[in-house]
Length: 268
Image (tube, rainbow, N blue to C red; front, top):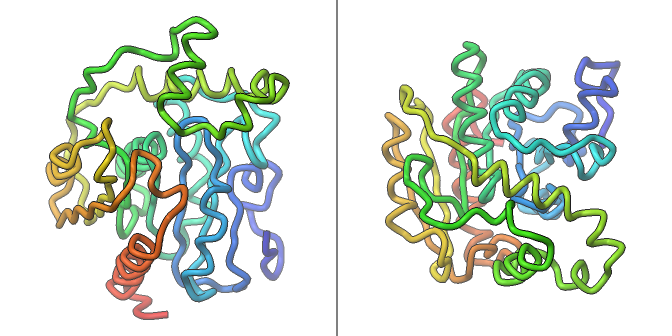
């Protein structure tokens, strides 16, 4: 983490556990918050800083139970999780920013944008989501978090989101099983409530072989904003961003830099 000149509030023990800045710049001009998918950590985005100049700050969000927040118990409900993130994130929204999340992270980003609006805080310039159907679209799938031990593990293997090394290491699986259940409970018990649409543009990324998030469900994000909604589909399954290829990387970089150029800060 880069330390800025002089102490800042967000560097308090509480704030620094949640956020990790990757840019070496002491005075970034745009900040991009990255939220992980269920069972994952924001470390999956660690190499994304290489796509951008240092004036654009990739900021990893470490949810409870992982990364710098490893010692804290994971949330099993979205509402209190979003509320706590909102309590801390405003310490870093002093410059224009965007939110990004994949799957569970997309839901967190969306509800965080709405929570900040309810609090009349500064909102994001863009909302970026991937691997997630529009929140108003019902999910007609059985709950996984309630499955007993082996059945839950079998379901995780089919999703192809947990590295095989975890399944092959009983001690490691014992460490992460509660986190995985909590994350799936966050997603599977989520209840969408209609509110005023967001005012920022939404950019949606989907995998063409994603059996859980069809293209039509991606296009339904348009209903969540009064601004534009752009949908881009890329080869891959639900976790296509985990090994992001050149096609996705180039499109993502263009979209983010476009968000930067539309702010008062201009280009970087």
